[in-house]
Image 1 (cartoon, rainbow, N blue to C red):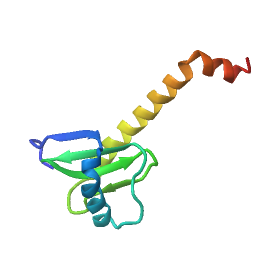
Image 2 (image 1 turned 60 degrees about the horizontal axis):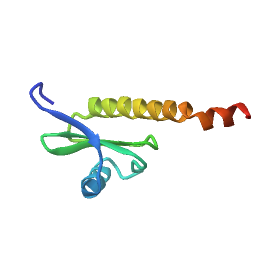
Image 3 (image 1 turned 90 degrees about the vertical axis):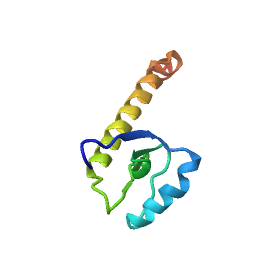
Image 4 (image 1 turned 90 degrees about the horizontal axis):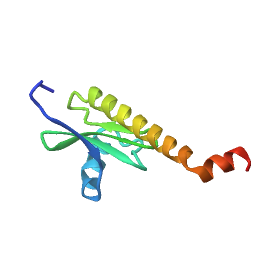
Length: 99
């Protein structure tokens, strides 16, 4: 990557399925990200993806280690935010307290 390239991190959508499948094959095809999937786009192409299942894939012909790191940080932040929202619900707090 050069310093002038724009990186877009976003949630995957159904239109991304084929690009993610191709990326998975390029990455070796061992496992695929699933659940909530985030993708990193550079110059309009998906170069990396990370799923809420912890699986990441990336383009082996592109310097994508930093992209995977950014996606992992974003995924961890989203999971922590969801957990906090879940614990803030009064019914959940009462259930957790055995009330």
